[in-house]
Length: 171
Image (cartoon, helix red, strand yellow):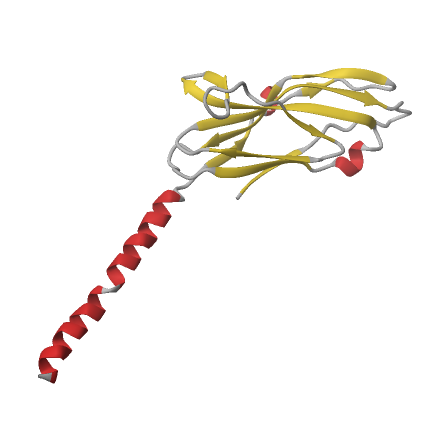
């Protein structure tokens, strides 16, 4: 009698790991590779800062994200990494962050939230230093600076106005 129970018990134990391996493979598929690349310097936003100037920012691209192979929603955080330098050159700097989804070859549309809601304005400043946003998978995105304003302190001698530097993380 015990011999008849041992064979089914061993068979059940040997077959048990398969669902676990399958679930692991599914999790790996959900976290499919995603690429994030800095935009070309020629397309980057520009600002013309000089002593005691109040000015605006020429729009430009910061990052390109390809999450076309990923089903997961991903949290991104955009940072200004050199705020410690900017505070010596600017009284304030407010930058409007644009998030665009690719709708065709070289066609981009501002990301909408929910059922066609108007895109919400996202600003990064020297005071907050970072912004976070969630992007769904199966798409290509670009992160831009659409507009902005600043007040540059007076610059003396060989000093120059520092430009903001950006860093993008995902989690």
